[in-house]
Amino acid sequence: MENNVYTQIGLILLIALSTKTAILRTEFASGAGSASRQILGTAVFGGMLAATALSLIVVPMMYFVIQKVVEKISGGEPSTKSMRNEDVAE
Image 1 (cartoon, rainbow, N blue to C red):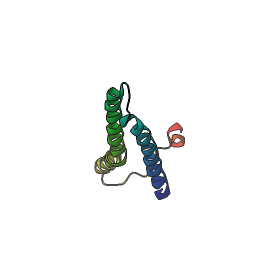
Image 2 (cartoon, rainbow, N blue to C red; image 1 turned 45 degrees about the vertical axis):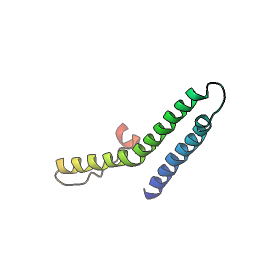
Image 3 (cartoon, rainbow, N blue to C red; image 1 turned 90 degrees about the horizontal axis):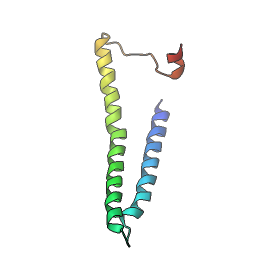
């Protein structure tokens, strides 16, 4: 489980870094029409920063909060049921 978490974090950071690096060309563009492209590049770069923060901080926190609510509703017992596709199909 712990290894899977590090793999997912690594993938999220790798994809975000590669996208942000590609957008840097647009932000530092010069020439005809570069003013509108720079604005678009800044918006996309900021959006990627926000999306990365959401996927690394907010989403795991929501899973934690939902798990605690479910435990409180079920009488304090942690849920051990897995939500994999094989379990749902049965």
